[in-house]
Amino acid sequence: MKKVAVFPGSFDPFTIGHEGIVKRALSLFDEIIIAVGANALKKSYYSLKTRKEIIAKVFQNEPRIRVDHYEGLTVDFCRKNEARYLLRGLRTAADFEFERAIAQVNKALDTDVESVFLLTIPEHTPINSTIVRDIIRSGGDASKFVPSVIRLKDYKGEDA
Image (tube, rainbow, N blue to C red):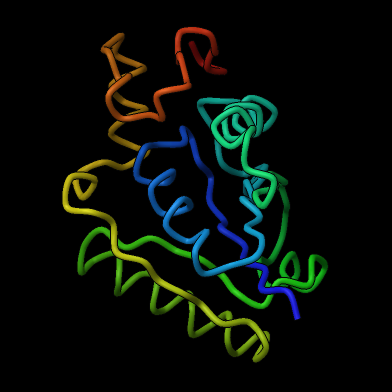
């Protein structure tokens, strides 16, 4: 059976921390679906379309990675895509506590889905989408925090 993992998130924006987790996870899975959560109640900086375009560009030469989006429960998306693994990155102990709670609820909702956690490399520990988004909103240079193939100035934020 093919090992398919879903890497869910808002990815607003996609950072080098996200990229690092996905690249390292390629040795563990046959396919990784980067699933951009579409939450109508949450105001995103980048549109869903833009976020998917950015991620697709980062992994354009990796056929085992697919970019998609979803609404609703992540375990439902996993079922629909025959994915048995949820991939998550951990930066800190606080991330672990938050992700553990979500993983336990997901396990209660679908016992066939396993959560797999990868620790970020130390250099990526302080990087998160909220901080990178604040740098972008304030007109700063966030290029060192996003994958090198991405030129953020080519993408307009929804509230830019």
